Image (cartoon, rainbow, N blue to C red; front, side, top):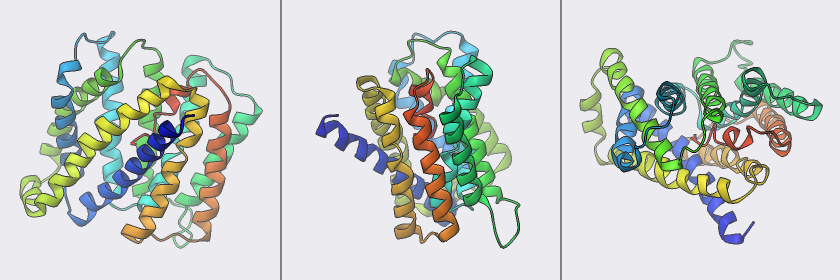
Length: 298
């Protein structure tokens, strides 16, 4: 990989990591309602990507479902979960999206998993459970991390369904993610949340800056760069580099939000990322989309 492209990959992972921390600050410290935050974000994405909306990918129901699961639906669960989960733990639990994608590709697309990838899946789940487990309260996992896991699963299902569609360009994909997300999230926020505008006004310029960072820098700039790298290099070269994302998120979580990170979480992180590395180094046909599951990156 060229040094310039490797530097771009580092930048993309850093932007994703920063987005996780910024999202935590928005929904926790600023107390912005999560569904409202997600609705505004995807409203901006839909508006800016509108010129690339047509022609509509076929079938219509699939692009709408994929757009909602990978966009508003998945991020709504993520923003709800990050209110109580730390950015560090959320980043590690989010890595479970990759083995979930692999398992769904077996169930839906009929792909096969051999023992090395099976070992990677097992290690990733074991590491994720270690991170999610609360030793003080016993085995029950936190609601926040359960929602993060649900977000990862939504992205995984979207990735596998997207595999069955051909020729959707990145910006057209972003346009349909925005369109499929903004209306459902707006109605959900109106029905389930309160004081959205007063809290946004109270947060002021800080919220506006976070919103623009999420919608413009992360959704459009970082994702577009990443899609370009996926198209330029083999997926099994790009996908392992995304491990920088959770590592950077852990570091930023410790520095910015003061995350608790003990020996148990360190062990879980190491085991999970070893599993992710094994999975990403084993080729399969769904890998380019599997690599996109937590580009929310997330």
